[in-house]
Image (cartoon, rainbow, N blue to C red; front, side, top):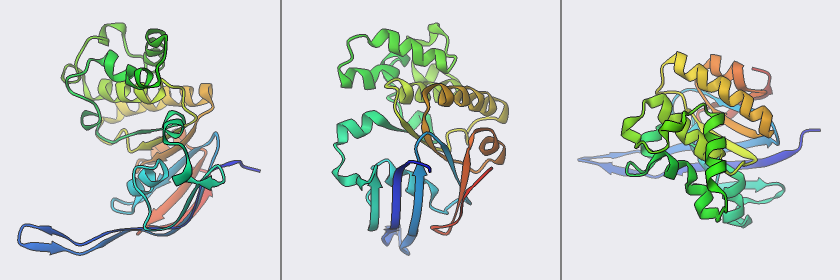
Length: 234
């Protein structure tokens, strides 16, 4: 039987009315009564059309947003009760646009090593190089700034940062959507090896069938804020 890391029951999220210039946009129901189990040590793909609520669900799972209704359990206990520092060490998220997720004034070494510095690691250099090796980042990247990197290199830096603490779980929010297909598939194959090496559990938000087939153990389909299919093979 699959061991469950995250369990969502009746999760609902509504973004209220907001003003844009002279007009008022109607409230948006991003998630509408979602029931979902996310297993340990598996790559769980979450697919669906744009606006289906995929990114919202990922942010709720990782604790960046709270649901308006329902519950999120983390290893059988309320996610809200999990010690934040320990939770963040074990559960990381990678965003769609890496340029918005890194400090433009930090070098690659500082970006990747930031989680280690926060955790008080005594040997950050070796861990940084190991994470760079996983993502096939050359050593001469260490002292470069984000604007000196290609889009694929910067996303690999963001991924290396998420892996440097050797977490148990990753939420990946369409991390390849801004990359050309050749670059994206290269990173997909790198990640596949890392997932196997570390035994990572993953929530992989994607709209790309080829990436899902390459990475995922199971696929869940989200439509208009509801899970309409789940648990099948890609």
